[in-house]
Image (tube, rainbow, N blue to C red; front, side):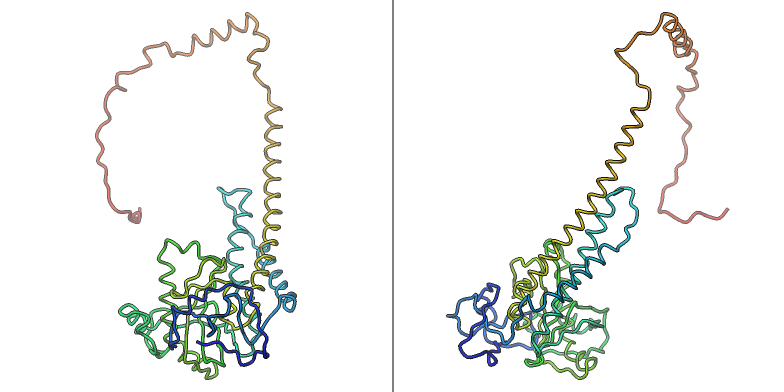
Length: 363
């Protein structure tokens, strides 16, 4: 996919806010494929510094600040409104755990909504977010299991063919000018996918969906036509990317949308969202600690109200000591008759049944 630069003003160079690796150009080459892992719109002129990008459109945070702040407000409200379920282990801290779980979910949704909002800066881009249930056609899964992904270039399948389940991407971005579609899966962080097979399973579903997407778009979205489909897993934490395997950093999203400034807007969005989340967590944590302090102080007060035994206090009177000694002598522990001979006998053997758990029989 080549860079679309015809709409640039003469002599103007737009500086992107990211530093993408130009070496990825050699990975993909100039050959175009109808199906592939997500690739950047790289400049043909390799002599130009990597920090310089030319895209026909640009967005600045000041222009979308109100819209993005509204998205943040809605996400924070949804997080705060959650009602945690009582937990005996977490106790007073259950609200904190509930917030952390809600943050993980809401951040992913926030990223999706922000990308949809910022993509409007490019009139050639359409972002699909609703009813994106793509069938996992059996033929696509079988083709992927027996062939390398690069060998399936140009293979497009009927979306109504027999399928094994479905896959719902976070976003489908369609560049109508290029007749290119991107299947995007946005993750707040890929750190939890490092040592598991879930990432490979996700890629398999995305690639199988890519083989039916052209037919699916044509039949379900007003005859929308594309001849190139690419998949990309976008890491919100912007760790090192690997375009050859479909992993993209959020800081490189300018090249997917062909809009300069999107990455900067997303970085500011996450920064502001993070501040709001930390303020919310701090408030809830202070409340939890306040409850614990009150409980501890109440327990201390209860202990102070009980009579204490003065180990080094005044001694008992002679009469009291004699009475206590008499009780100790009569407790019966020195009576050897308390041990019966029957107790030394081994218990009779009992037949024990073992097996798999079954429903108890009716009485």
